[in-house]
Image (cartoon, rainbow, N blue to C red; front, side, top):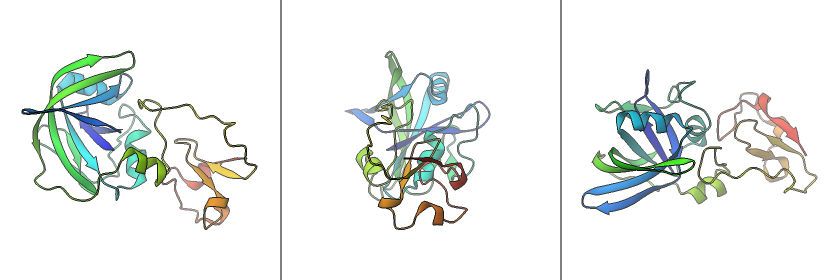
Length: 209
């Protein structure tokens, strides 16, 4: 899992992607796919540069929620996150990342829904720490879902869960809190409890079952 940082029109922004692929080693070149509707897609096309922060397993689900389930056109996605801005005007996260690197676009390919940006790695962090968060870890451990613009997004089948058990569902990222799978019943959670994926408050959750 990766945070792609971009230079915004009025402030830095970022989005979440699940795959960054190495293309060549000399020069070091990578590829990343970003949906046409994403603000980050627009900004990379405009500036030709972006950063990659490699998320670790210690990265909070709130970080993914902040960067993956809203648009940088409408909000300051980095407002409550710790980050720094490189001299190229793109942000990189400061906390719970394995490393970061700076990329300059050298080519791009358009598909029906996404742009594949091919970029040369121009700089990066000196150290590598922690264990990278895989897409499997994000789904299996954090219980996260793919945002609508993600290449792996699948519409939720509301009929797939035939269990009569009560569940509380986040209206933004569709994270499900099931009392049968948790140590604390939902109604006994503190009032300031928030969705572990996108940070929505407890009072916004909807009851389904």
